[in-house]
Structures are given as structure tokens and as C-alpha cells.
Length: 384
Image (cartoon, rainbow, N blue to C red; front, side, top):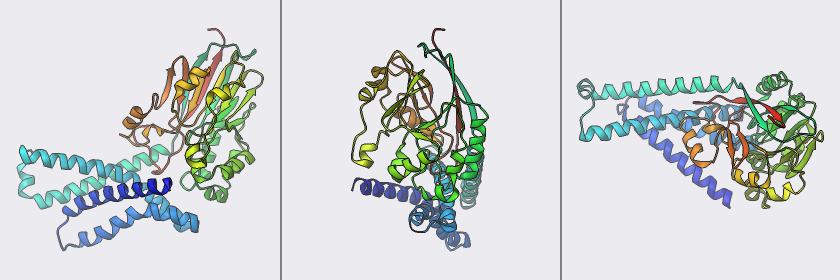
């Protein structure tokens, strides 16, 4: 019931935003013209593709569902920027009502001016979407150096690679994963850490593309470890857990492991486990009872909520993802308002924390205002 209510609210908001964009575009087209006759069905077909594709995936997974999801995913990104442009234009219209700011030539040929404005908006949004797609295809290697002032039983340093939010599925396919895995292995990591949302809800596209075989190619002497994210729970936590475990990822589900007798890795279940599974995750305090805090302690928690609790429990470093740093500007400002740390390296009550913006995308296959990243975390232990 909670999911049904949430989904209904999303559909209503999505429909209202699309109608707002549609109505403003329609006002720019002359009545009875051929452009208007095409505009109406094309617009609403684009607006419906994502929802139709996601529903069809659950009934018949194939080329048609793929095409719908891909088209609809691009539309989601375009919709955001059309919405922002329409709001900006309406603000100018409101200001012009009180203080004339529209140039005389535009007022004298207003019908033609509206057509130019519509055409210019389509071109601008098209360029933003194209640039965002190219950007999303090219994750950068981000090197981050940190120091944990604890002895690690003789281990002086750790070369870790962090990949959050891959979102394997219809949009992030096996070909893209192969390029990511190649980059990761090229860093010669000691350990590979995947802080959640490895899968993008539905497992069937992952199985169809045999992406698990590519995951198995991830190579690190200390192992490949992951935790569950909200998307693993949305798609079904147990099938996701089994698939990832069978393909080389050691999943930590509210569990603790000591690596080479040198440091602890604590993996938490997703923050929203209670919402999706009806059972809350363990408290961080309970998990930390299994830890010898004289050694370094690294916590993986997909969503960066309440890092102060991990700090108070004695963690030295917390690794998270989930936020995508907004993925599409200007949504990053919302992320900054929601979290103590929405992206990057920070310190919370004496504990170091890194929140990655992820290597993949969710929804629109675009990134605007930030680049996807593979994080090469170089950790030094002991005294400076």
C-alpha cells in the first residue's frame, strides 16, 4: 500500500510536469497548423515511453521494452531541462507584465518569436542531453589520499578502488561494464569495494546480458566486497544477493569481516530495508561490538544518512554512494541540503567519510554538472 501511494504520487507529479511543458509548447504553435497536429501525439508518446517500457519489462523483456526504456530515459533528462526553461520563460513573462522587457521586434512579430523560442529551446535541450550522455559514458579515475592514524598490524598502506551505483540493467549494459572493469583492474587494487546499487532493480536484463561473467573479472588480492543498496531491495534483495554472490562479490549484509588481520570491513544493509523487507537493519552499535577498535574500521553504508552514528560507534572511515551528486544540475543543490555530506571527502565528528557520485546513472543515461567516477582511494595507516 505504501509503495502504491508513493507510485501514485510520482505518476501524478510526472503527469503534471509534462502537461505544464506540453501546454506551453502548444501555445507557441499556430492553431490548425501541421506542426501542432504532429506535436500533440509526439509529445505524449515520448512522455509515456519510460513508464510503458518499465511495465513491459516485467511482462515481456525484449527489444521493444529496451527501446521504450531507452527513449523514455532520455526523455526524463530532457523533461527536467524543458521544465526549467519553461519556468524561466514564465518568470520573464510575469516580469514583462509589470516592466516591459521583451524587445520591440519580438512584440511586433510575437507569433514568429514564439516559434523561434520553441525551436531554440528544443535545440538547447537536445545539446544538453547529448553532452550529458557523452559525459556519462566516460567515468574518470578520481584519486583520493587519506590517512587513518591507527596501526594496521603491519600494513602500511591500502590501494582500494570504490565503485558505487553501477546500476547494471537495461541502460548500463555488459559492454559498458566491461570498460569499467578494465579501468578498475588497471589500477591494480588491493581491494575493491562496491557500496550498493550494483544492480538497477530488475535482474532479468543483467542475466540476459550475462553481466555476472564480467563482474567475475574484477581482480583484487584482498577480494571484492559489496553491500546492498535501495535498488537491490526494490528489485528483490534475495535474488540480487544470490546473483552477486555467485559472481564474485562478497556481499556484507549487516556483517563484519577482518581483512588480512589488518583492518575491519563493516557492511550495512540499506537504510530503507525496513520499508522494503519489513524488518529493520541492525544498529551500527551492535555491529561494532564484533570489532577490535584498535585496528582501522571501514564502514560501507549505501545511503549517507546519519554518519555521526558510525563516528560515535568508533568507525574510522565511512564509504557511501546513492546521491549521484544530483546527477543532473541543479539537483545537486537538493542533495547538499539533504545530507551532512552529499558528495566527496569530508569529516564527521572525527570520522573520515567519502560519498561517491557513482560510476553509472539511474533513470536518464546522462550526467550534467558532474562526471561519473571510479574512486582510487589510497589509504595510509599509522603515525604520519
